[in-house]
Length: 311
Image (tube, rainbow, N blue to C red; front, side):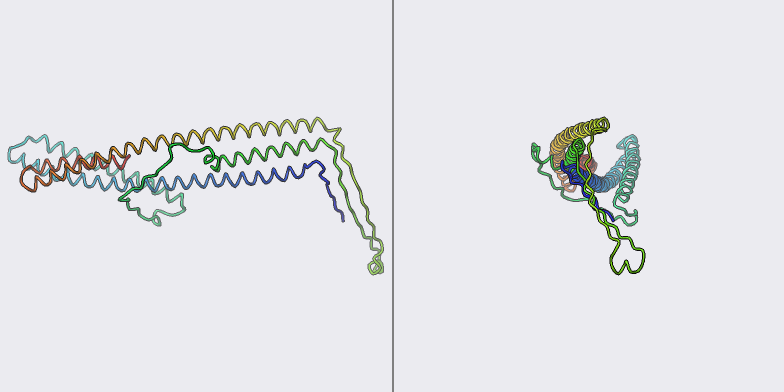
């Protein structure tokens, strides 16, 4: 039996151990970054499916409105009050709406299939989503502090890789210095049964060994340059990751502000169109205006609602 003990005078083994820990932490952070990416895709598909569901409902309302409008145009045409051109245009609009509805249904089917694949379910197991009646607005800050970006898993993983590469460089540098290994060995030679009873034939030895890396400096220098190049590459990757994170954050903030401005303006347009539509419906019920005017306002309101959901 033998036992060897490396004194590790210059910390080579300790540096390698810290490098291995850094690699393990970096891989765990990379897994977390991938997990967050999957979660973001799931949330995005969920919102897309709800928006498509609501848009299909709006198209159904548009088809119903256009169908009623077509009936009114046909009545006027039969009475000789209007040319045939208007009913034909409404027929074309109805055909376009039917095609648009089928396109939305196809997009929804694709999004549902993608979502089912991400969460490990079949299309039959995936529940139907009901569109939200009220959407909550995210109050994001105008600027993002750098320390918040530093907590991103991809940046943290890149930082751990730098620390691991730094420890690898330290471990290689420690190989340039002499080191001492102490070996302990013991043996038991048994020739007969009496030797077992008397514990005879035992031997033990302590063997110190000194390693002097004076004959492999070329290999060690090449190994050191390789590790230093790996460290430089890791630092460059970290800088690129930070740059990409800052760029993504600013781009997301800019898109959020633009979307908020668009949605606020579009919501006012929808509200104003709905008010006009309600007033026109009241005039029609009071016999003060034709139904076609009310239907026109309803069509405009539905069109603006679809633009709001699409935005």
